[in-house]
Length: 354
Image 1 (cartoon, rainbow, N blue to C red):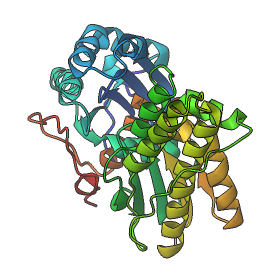
Image 2 (tube, rainbow, N blue to C red):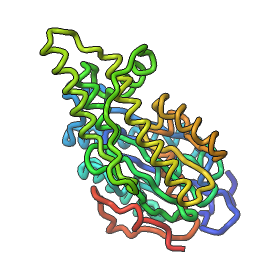
Image 3 (cartoon, rainbow, N blue to C red):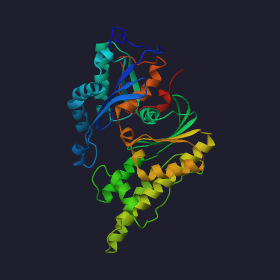
Image 4 (cartoon, one colour):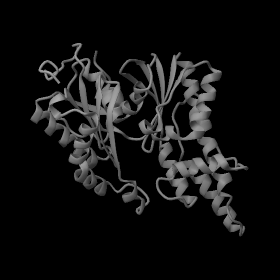
């Protein structure tokens, strides 16, 4: 790079800018370098799945320690893959929340240290905004847009009234979709994380045990999956009390069909009610084949464009954090160095100011 290239970019300038983003909200340590808010130069993810599998779920204390162990290595790898150095970076972004507080702290401390040492802007970023704006890495978002967020810790219907403006229309009242999948997978004797196993079994099943749908109040966009999980357990116990082997494939199909029916129906109803011009599918469960196919079919029927990130951008990753942080970068909305990890963090409050 020449001397001009090494001069730091600033919001509003025509110079290409580079955001280094860190994501440590749960059990993936990820660092990415994204140019211009859309071009992913690197997106390194270190997963802890093998570590937590023996416990049947994420152990927060272990997750935090693993983040500390690999953070420096992952930063170096992300810079190397991107072909840039720290002197080329124009801003540091980090997941501020929501998430596991200990895990978030590792990323926040690392990001603040980098921002302070390099004298760069710091951008605290909302994890769910990241999942939503992962879609911006694969296509243009048309507003107003309707986002269906489905992940291990979140199930929400979010209206994007304009760029960076979030309004939550509905959320889960108990288990998130991903959490329900993992609990049902455990009952079906699958290892953690169980969602992909349930999806695969449901796709191959010839029969279906029809399970209840929790619609809640007629005008509600909220969700509840604890009763569905209990219905699966009740079916298993009923079979065993009769001396029969539970039909796990039919149960997996029944469970998945119930989940998909409820989340897609409510999402499409919200899209129509708020005149959405586009539907976005976001979060780790967006990798679910059955959900993707059903939502795509419904959007086609309604003549609504649908954006879904590729699988590698559905699960927790730092490129999505950079994409969301770009909203703040372009408006010059930066965080101070007293930024704190926020395990409970309002998406609506994080909306852009401009």
